[in-house]
Length: 328
Image 1 (spheres, rainbow, N blue to C red):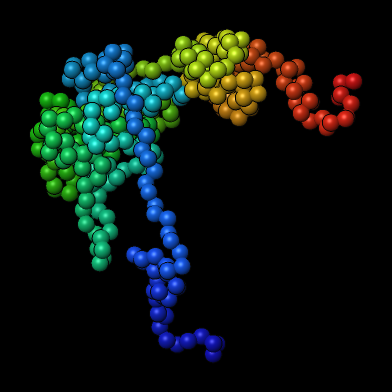
Image 2 (cartoon, rainbow, N blue to C red):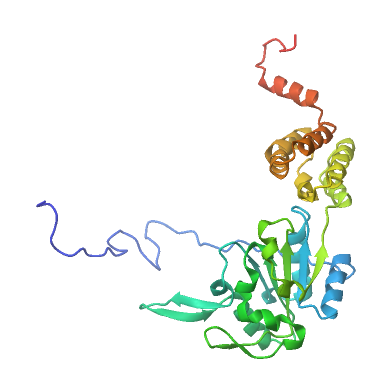
């Protein structure tokens, strides 16, 4: 082991590695890094029916609104546009997503490492937004929580759960750390929720009653509009609408899908791939205890893309030029 030094290892600097910080190399001209342009969020007209419902719920004294519906109905799309429409100022909107490991320490306040060692208590997303909203009382602030049912909501909100009530706004309350917080009256919470998520049964009843719930169901009208805008053939659109409505008529709501599931079906090839890549796996999972329902859904799908058409297309693709037709 003579090749191993007994001296302490010396950390390498940037200059040891031939790198420079804060200045360019004489032989090269670095390209400046520019932030990617932020796409402006489309705001909704004041006559939008869903926006009117949200404003009515807020006027009635609800702390916020939960948009509920099967996957693919555009809940997040609508909620984001409503949030920016209500807030008017983009800086007054915060968007977060709840998940299984999301905690009080991520949402209210928690200890984080600090330079030089040790930890310091810091306000997190909701507490910070409360402070910002209190500093600008004339401006509506919005917190949008995507997938609110994916975690233990009561635990995440903690002491703040009680003070979401509109008649308790602007009242001081004490957090677990001993610090003081108020929830301003100009702070609104919007959220999205899939009723069939496994965690939905744990959504706290006390929180639910503080929120208005607006259902966003699957819509064949919206689906038709999307496909027409993308230039899909009218005959294909009609067949897809028939299938879509047949699925919605199934008694088991677990198999209901939103219009977004079929939004990529612009021609027969993309429609076949949509079935193989997304729809069939979804229905297999939803019908894992009901083979008859899966068989029924498959029969409805064959009216969209007949099996013989799909088989012929597959055979034509597989055949090499000059080879005889497989059916000959």
